[in-house]
Image 1 (cartoon, rainbow, N blue to C red):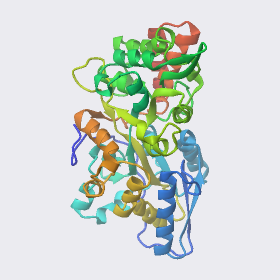
Image 2: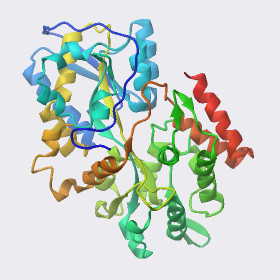
Image 3: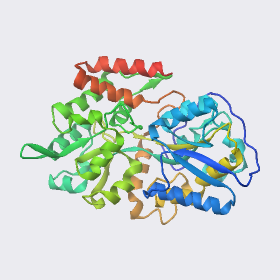
Image 4: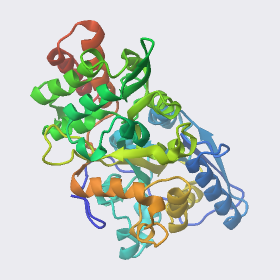
Length: 430
């Protein structure tokens, strides 16, 4: 259970990397790869831009150059750059690629760089313990959390009210399917609004899938990095997606070609009444939805039974310094700046991210109705939280599940066989 001081722990026994020098040099340019573009104006991108500006003001002669990348390609490109000696100074890494990073030897030891200089209360301020420890291997830390995230089921309050559906009444996946059927509206034989949307593309999944909560709610998904998909729970999860399309006719078949951004953008445009989205996009959805951000709500994760809410995943983005960076001290200094209290406050107030620091989370300004939507996530973590195992190579695990659903939908393959194929694909990457 996650509390403000304690949650899941993650660990592994992997490769080491060198420590960083202690004195910064002037006239340095630090390169950073991230999926954000600080020249744009979404909340997180504005927050990042302001962090860069404040850092450069405080460190004359040091510049930060951001080279935006496609989020799903970051780690693959970084490891290729590490092999050829052309990687950036700072790399962003998401949950599913943490194991690949820590095993690669491509990340410098941040514990030696600056964290050992912190007081215990400063380290303990990072209250999502699973996220803080995700990049820790022994006494070396290869990554630190920028912001924690999760996957959520978003819904439109106005459409729920129009159909007299109480959000708190939806506790099971069967109830989700039934509500989605009622929320699907048609005019002249054509669907105007689909009841439910979830990305089922095998590309650019980014950990955003209903499968992860469904599979975890049914028991162990991985045991010692061996997948346990092709069982009753996995079959039930695949069949639910197939039934939502074929039986309930509440989700379009075209979702098999839709990735995370597609579903989010279509939800903003009014195509779905409910959608599986990255919680990190909440601020953008509320700000840009043509149907009004005041109608945006977040459901507690459904479960297979109504006795408790389903599990809430701890996801997010971390940052690391390349072990062969030519500007290691400046890079570590900027990375430390990105997780300072001032920066965490920016990630929260401008970017709509749940604070990584307890001191920021407890600030009176954050404990107001304006940030009430974050409380739902924290309560979900508190009730039942989990992380995918960082000791395994979990890259593309959700793409494997999406592929399984596709195989059943268009390949005339049984769910069990499709999940067996997914298990083999996972094992091939280990």
